Length: 165
Image (cartoon, rainbow, N blue to C red; front, side, top):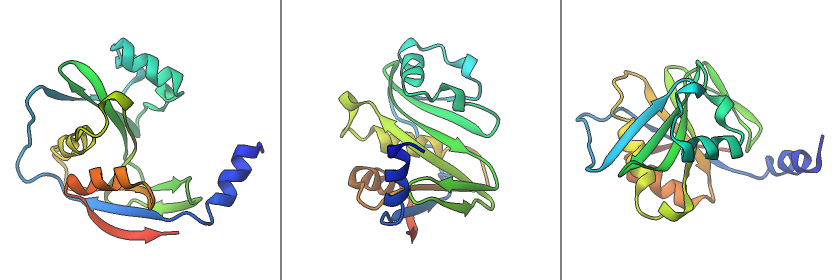
């Protein structure tokens, strides 16, 4: 075990996670000049900037049967992305706990490129994902002290479901 892992393990006892839920959009939402793209295979990623980012962050290999990548493009530029997981349970590493995902779709690990932050792209990405035709509930979480994520999640019409520590 390296020092970073030990540090994260110890911090997990002091962190609080906010868990939010939302149903799909009642009416399909669209935004001018925005496009949402889903990637189910790493080989589908053709955008050079996106592929370079995923390789640099060691995230390209995540794309598989249960984990899908959703990317928001604005005027053909990659601006924000996040992951969707469809499975029975999920381990929240930040607090070292496993949660059940009974009839829920987990949205996780979202990022907006720094030059595009504070422009509402994160909220738009979440709202566009909620256009998916599903009967399952969308679930997303963030650290209690991550105010930017909380604001984006709440602006996307998610409701706080519970706090976990």
